[in-house]
Length: 176
Image (spheres, rainbow, N blue to C red):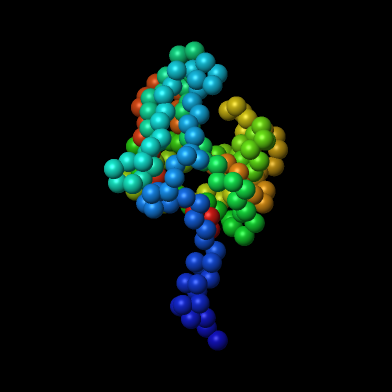
């Protein structure tokens, strides 16, 4: 017997969990900016809700004082990812390359990262959780890729080794 369209849609809906949806005017207090000024740099990144209700991560990168990055991080609490394979986010970038990062424990020194390109148009980016590789202070670690059961932090980082402005508009993030 073939499954009905409704049962397939319900199955798909059950395997999706919204991490954050900016269109619902959710509180932004768990979104934090971490720029290179934590180590003496001069880059300036900000995060706020734009006029369309989306999260806006934008700023200017400076290479002065060994700087070169800006990041925004979200702390969702302990978020189980056991039943999910990927993170999907909807965003509009500026045609530049960004880094996506997660941590399964806030106290862990490493992040699990990958890069994605933006097109200047609205995009849906899918990132396999198992494709995220460990990194610490810009260096890839000789350790296994992400295989955790939880997330406690996720975020976006911009820094391409040039002094330049950036802008990323984020609509939503979800687990699938």
